[in-house]
Image (tube, rainbow, N blue to C red; front, side, top):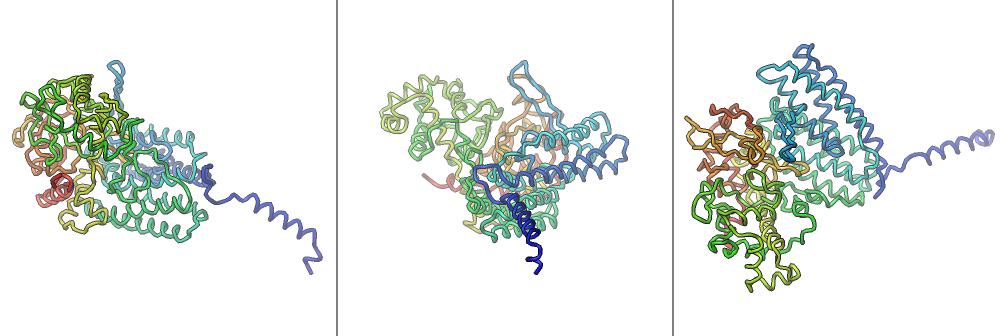
Length: 608
């Protein structure tokens, strides 16, 4: 009766409802177009940034210490909610906000040397919670910088035209970052607040994923995400930093989430980017294909193939490439020693020791600089330095090229693999390709993380957890390569000043006189800085440190446990290793060494 009585009103209401339905955004994946969820994500980003800004504004030199600590902690936790988005879409600001309390030196040439003091949450944490309260001009500069910077980040955000694949990659990067850096204490060196800060990261991932609820074709997959994130948050919330089981966390949560990312990409019918240092389709942190090898090779390099690897191996072992005719790459890089030589310092072509210990080659591909002092900018580039060094090959590249051309052994492979072009560039590419192949990820530890074996002892698992936590090893040796290339972007390799001594005597140490990165620019703040090497295959690569000072891993661990050179009483002004003792017990040190032994690749313990 009412419908008949008021036909015009019914029609009007129908039109209004119809128009509202038409205006409602399409809550689905827009492949190749800006995501319809950008506004939701941007608004959430603004909320957490505003909250971080609100609390950091309360920090002031006139406040009580308790009030400043309270404001800092609250702001920091809100920042941690914003962190996945800053890391994904504003990486330079992420590096600034998250910087360790270490002087950064940028060198372009002799006339352009910048010394940059960080002004980050980490710096503020150390000022507020250090042994000496530093309420001074530096303190003001740091908190004032954050008070200004957070609103700046908000005003200059770029979350406008991101596609859904970008948001999924952002979530994947955050997952990798938590596992490789977030739970290690890297971000919170004083408070060890890492687990709760990881919770804040995951709360944001849950929020972003919730925006996508309607976009899932498979609703059960969305529910799997919700259940996994909630379980992860509960696991982190209940954890204690020193005793947290990082092994189980990565194996059961990180790897599961990487698999869920791939399942989500399929559900959304999107293709994740292949032009990044990580292989975005890898579903295991310790998979052999976790890294994108292409991005660790010079642009335009020939594709890696078994044939090029085989050719590179022959060249690597060819003594005719040196002036003496008795030295090859394999002279100093012996496979059974994980491509080191067992000497304190490398032996040159005249039988005399060189300046530094021979670095291992496995996983060297996953670095951005080469040699201990970082003077090499690529595998092909470092081969040039070896060829020209009078104590090594001592043969210029043109002469090496002639020798290879004259050797009939190389005619067929160069004809087929390099279009018959025997050039020094192609020779170096073949050798570098062989070195790139030396990253098998087939150690006992890898196989357990990959689910191929279940053979780790309780001591070995404990050792990994200590390495990643209390011992702070992983704050410099980042998984999965366990070297100094920094996650989650893996675009920069770190250098450290540890205060390494000249001799292994702990009671009366003498500081080593190798200047490291001080040369050639003579920057005092870079004196004795050396590249962070990988600890993979470390059981095969002694003696240790850049000068080979320590014969055993026990000595290496004792050195770190006492706080490096400063901890032994040496004057090391720019030491990056905290001088305080790690407080590791003999049993804990034994466990860490047991873990490091599980990183020995099967490839280097069996015959060809």
